Length: 127
Image 1: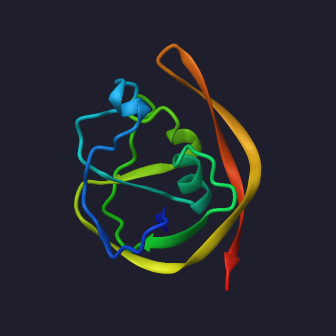
Image 2: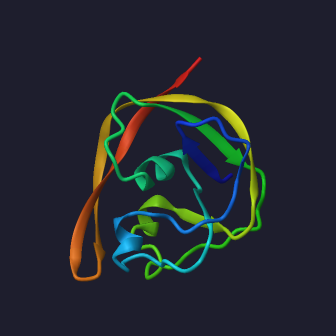
Image 3: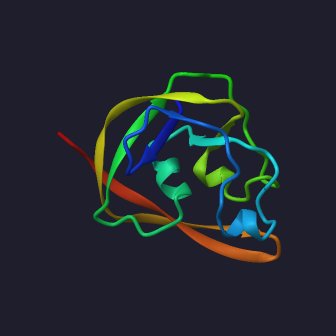
C-alpha cells in the first residue's frame, strides 16, 4: 500500500515538481509533475530528508495502484525510499498520527559525483 506523510491535514494531492536541492541542481528529475509517495511509512520519512525528531505527522494511504516507479537516475535515493510517482491527482485516506522518536539508521547514496547521507526514523503511533 502506498503512503504519504505530512504535518498538514490533507484530502488530496496534485502533481507538481518537488522543490528541493536535488531538483534545483539537476540531480533529480525536474520536468515531470508528480505526487511522490512511498511503498512504506519509513520510506516517506527518509524521503523528507530532514531532522524529524519530536515531530508529529499525519499518515495517509493512497488507494490507487496507477503509479510508476522512478529510476535511480530520476531519483538517486529511490532504492532507499521506495519512492513511487502518481502522474495524476490522488485522494488520501487518513490512517493515523505518528510521533518521531530518533534516528534508527543512516544510508549513503550517490548523486552526480557526490555522496549524501540520509536517515530513517523510529516512530510510534499516537492513539
